[in-house]
Image 1 (cartoon, rainbow, N blue to C red):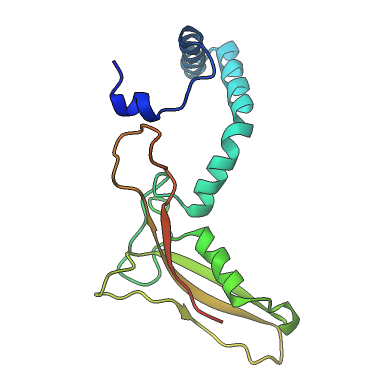
Image 2: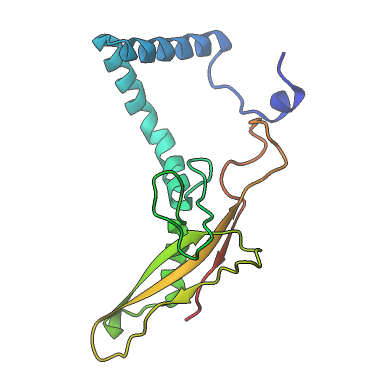
Length: 180
């Protein structure tokens, strides 16, 4: 029997329960068959992945832009610039985009802004992580303005169960950016 929170808040099914079980069993056996080297099963799995892509792609794109902690843990390094390693997330692409917006339109000034975001807990005091600009543009030639920003994604921590009641994306993205 399902927990009452799941019954109350879960998505309503689009197909009957028996048909849903058949669909899941088909997908599982196709996947396992493909892993074991069955070419027919592997092609079936590829077809299922292709069919599901239009539905899931916007969700995946949003999680990648956010650099969701549900994809990979944040680095939270001691230094301002986190290590660029495959085991953790360095920073948020969303904050890098926000910094470019915050910088305003500088295309007529022969300059561009390049931002590197880094995940840190924004409330820490030691060490304190603040955004910074690493160079200046004198306005006489083309220039790349390099900035470093700081971000922490905050997720709903009230429900550890996947009942559909709480979101999986960040509830808040706390970002420290440089003003224009």
